[in-house]
Amino acid sequence: MTTATANAIVSRHQSAPLSTTFAETFEIRPLDAPLGAEVIGLDLSQSLSNADFARIHRAHLDYHVVVFRDQQITPAQQIAFSRRFGPLQIHVLHQFQLPGHPEVLVVSNVVENGKPIGLGDAGHFWHSDLSYKEKPSLGSLLHARELPAKGGDTLFANMHLAWDTLPPALQNAVDGLRAEHTYLARYAELQQRSPWRPNLTPEQIAQVKPVLQPVVRTHPETGRKAIFVSEHFTTRIVGLPEDESRDLLDQLFAHSTRPAHIYRHQWQAHDLVFWDNRSLLHLAAGCPPGLRRVMYRTTIEGDVPR
Ligand code: SIN
Image (cartoon, rainbow, N blue to C red; front, top):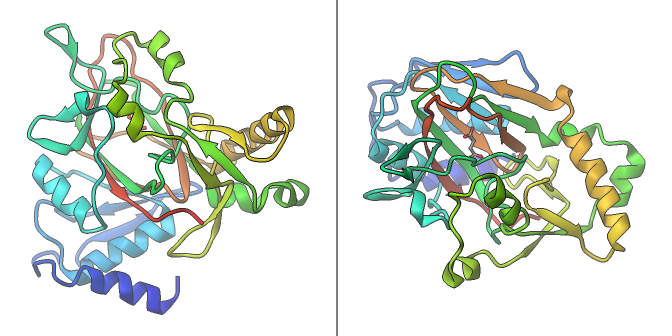
């Protein structure tokens, strides 16, 4: 990131209320993994000073996943913190919004009175959030409200590393190409696995028209290149015969999610995990049947990928 960009980003947030309570006292510890850092000693129920915000912002760009430990925050506080990074996006499945807080998507396998309270199979396939929108998510924040005694992990794959380690012939073959992303790509398949998934109304379908995205995007703040296709939402590479497109996508999917690129997050009580959708794919490993998992997700709108 250039200094000018960093200054522009910090100044965008200078109207936020100042608090000195936690200034510079918290610790940012890189994880022993190809991405990720944890933040210890910061209370996000308080508003952040601009200096603290700038440290968190920098850590998010450097590590791509920031794990805030022990955050006993309300949905309104999660929304307020998320908004510091940009406008929030409302998920097309309005059925799973948190009542009173449409910015919060409930991700949960819990069924109450015969009705699912949340999107139980969110993240079943590797993806980058909302890559099917013209402006996909900059980042997402997932807050652990109720965790199972085992399972329920989330995996993150570093798409900058995936690009950097892609064989040069494959880099040359895909750089500059565009691919179609659509929310509907695997919706019917997911409905078969999870019959509680609602049929989409014509209004919902109109909100998720297919879009074209670069196969390789440049991170708007760091300038790093990243592979930007996923097994969940990417259907084809534009301008290639179907078999060639399928073959290239399969190679990219397989390479992207190699173990060397992955951090597996094992949730602790009250974790708030903030990831960068411009740098990563993620996957929910799944929750064992009979155990409860309740998570609240906010997503921040990003740029048009280039
Ligand atoms: C998601 O894909 O946003 C959900 C991830 C998870 O539940 O672990």
